[in-house]
Length: 350
Image 1: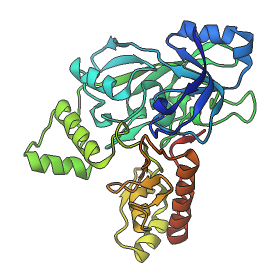
Image 2: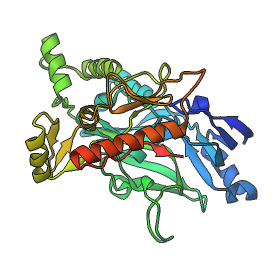
Image 3: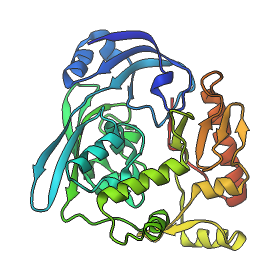
Image 4: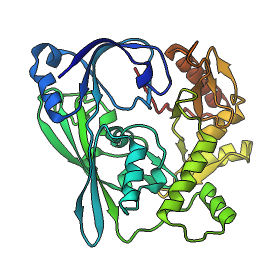
């Protein structure tokens, strides 16, 4: 176990915000984590679990002990007549893992291609895109209780998945509660890829790709390639322009609320959900309020997609976390004043 002090975190957050970790430990195995929790001083310290840094906004130096998750490994755990079960270490890059499953001839994750971050972060956020959410493919995960050091395994039901939500995003009101925010470190994730494979194509961007290519029945690899093309066209590469991907959740409203908004602005982009609610496109709401391309300091709204906030300062004069959050709050106020909708940020503010 290597304990590092005063570690720059700029390379470890996708926004490229300048900040430092007072103390950082790289967790490359369960044994590394056990060593941390066996050390009286480290065990007693507040802890911050860091994966790929693609879904955080740092507003200052991190005083808590940073546990940088670097547990690797990919394997097929099981194959039955109905599914394949695959497993990856929490430190694996999510997109690389999706590409690996396809290279093994195991389709099912292609709609989740090019989502930034690590495998360990995927159930925390219940990542999703183009008609598929992680919960649709989830089997189980392994984690360690940071208070007791005890390992445990959770099923999908125990993860309490919701829209960009899980038990890992909620703090326990009492010790007996099951909220796991700040209490657990995920070490490995297992996913169930169903047989026979069926493509998920019910999104306009994918329908356009079918029309452009003339391919009515695409393979999983073709869907993977299409989604990579779509996302690269719409979203900035964090290596080029710092960002945390979609900054706000798409809000859901009742049919009555949606009808009221349509009455005032018929162009609003909306999607009926299976439970009867209506999902509104947060990017459209933000764009309608005139924010696309605007900036606060060195934090700005991406010109091609209003749902994405970016670091306009580059490496020489990067945006601060304060600038990002000032911009985010201004956007929230505008959307609420015009539509009566409260946008909820996706990234974790540290």
